[in-house]
Every structure is written in C-alpha cells, then in structure tokens.
Length: 115
Length: 112
Image (cartoon, rainbow over all chains, first blue to last red):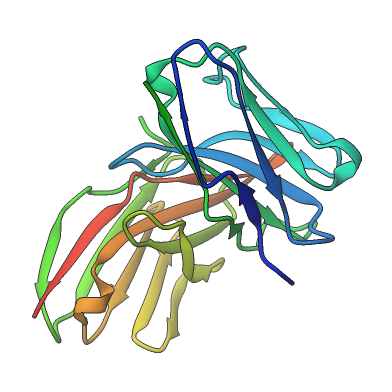
C-alpha cells in the first residue's frame, strides 16, 4: 500500500493552455474521486468513478474539464483552455468499499497556478 | 443553503482547553459523517468518523452526532498547539452514487 499518488505536485501554466493531472489510487480501490480546493474553502466535489465508469460529475463543472479512468486503475483530469479561476489545489481520493461508510484516502494534491 | 455548513473561524483556544467544532448538514439522507484535519498546504487526514446518533470517543477526540437536528460536532480535549489546523466536516451521501460533501472548514488556533 503505497498511498494515493498524484502528479505533478505543482503546475504553472499560462491562461488558455491545456493541462492534465494524473492520479494513481491505492491498488484495488474501486472508487476514485476528484476534488478542487481553493484557499479558505473546503474540497469541492468534481467527479467520481467506480472502476472505469464515471458515475457522477458536478453540475458546477465546466465543459472544459474532463476526467477519465481507463481500465479502472489510474485517472486523469484534463482542463482545457485554462482560466485564472482554475487556479486551485486538485485533490484525488480513493476508497475500497461498496459501502458509503469508508474514509477517503487523499493524495498530496496538484497545485495549479494559471498566470 | 450549503449542504454542509461550518463556522470558518478562526476558533482560538488556550493550550489544555477543550475545543468545540460544529457542523450542520442539509441532506437528511446523509449516512456517514467524518472529521478531517488539514494542515496548511497538505491534504486532509481523517480524525474521526461516526455513523450513529450519540458520542464516539477516540483518545482526545469525541465526535457527536444528532441526526434529528442534522448536527455533528467534534470535541478536542487537552488541546495542543499541534492541533492548530483547519478541521473539515464531511458527509457521506448515497443518492444513486456515493459522494462525500465537505464543509468549508473551521480554522483552529491553539495558543501556547
């Protein structure tokens, strides 16, 4: 159990560029979540996968955001045509159970700065 | 109305005192309740979880849940400066899919 791994840890990009983040969950964790957190706020739910299926996507999420989890293992989150408002910490979390009563295991996050 | 509400603080308590953190939630279908601690620049780490009405104790931490009032709290006894962090309340929902909703967090400062 090596924990949830996120890459890169930091990303600086210019407005209008596309960025992609990767999350490797704890092996055999069937659920994977992406959250976004800005300073002074709690993590905001973005999307959720169960195995390779994306089961829910926040209504607040722009069409510029897309996430995939091919083969139910690692996941990628892509932001197209980045805007300054996209600057945030992007957190990935996973958990192993079919039940709701399971804690989330968080990665260290990817800090995105859009200039 | 936000789904999970917390007072953003900061809540300042002297070292050795009891810190009381509160959280209310709006969805009566909420099934599980979590308290995470988050240090600046770090990811959240689980402190406590509770599923049933009443109290649950773990060391210096006690979580309290009242589903009728849609209220969950966290008590930290003998507060230490190392407890200074942001405490996030999270609620687990099973509404078709499994989702965890976080509050904005309460910033706690324990004064030495």
